[in-house]
Image (cartoon, rainbow, N blue to C red; front, side, top):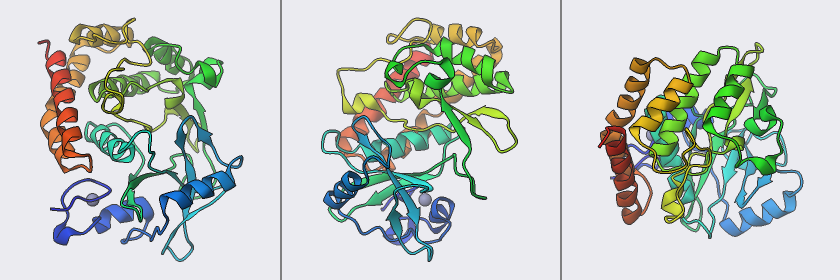
Length: 308
Ligand SMILES: [Zn+2]
């Protein structure tokens, strides 16, 4: 049975996407045509370099849907979508990111509509709608946590979970709500073995009415699946980057001023998600061996959260 390239759930008649999923992501019942090869993508990226943001090894291209809604086009500026082409160094990263973001969505973490596009050579690219470009046009202000902390982008791997909490206390309009969202995101991020939640992968969004909120989550990947022997958190929680336990999360909840009951219910919500997340992993576009590894990892972390 085929899976939808957007929600990863089964589709009827071996279709590549559900019409309603295409509608949510692109505003049209059919996914716009994207007839580009990987080599061409990289050539385009090189041509447009300087005008586009290319951070680290991950190339990010700006895209828009054509006027007649039939095609996806690369643009130098003002695109409402970000496309991450597949990479030879880290195979299946797009498949990994789309799945990990979907698991985050499942536990109630806010994310932007996103999906997978199959390129002519069979490989897959990841596409996500920008959360800073509202439907009515214009651009919302976004500041990542390096900027909030007043440190350079090069220092994105410094800091801690506690620093992020303090930044929300200082800058968010409703700190208690935002800190609870941060706790849930950090817990999920650890659970899915994302070792790359650093200060630039967390942002504050200023809404049209001027309110400051934690932005929707982005760049969530199971990094342990990509670099198996090098798994540790980027931002330590209660001073720990690895060997995290149930107690670590309860202590961090205390730092967040979350009542014990609320913290325990957040941990339970995470462990309760194991079954559905495992199903989602099986329906995803990862390779069979990767699916088994991913499922095993979240099973281990579920046991840790349960206090075993
Ligand atoms: Zn779907």
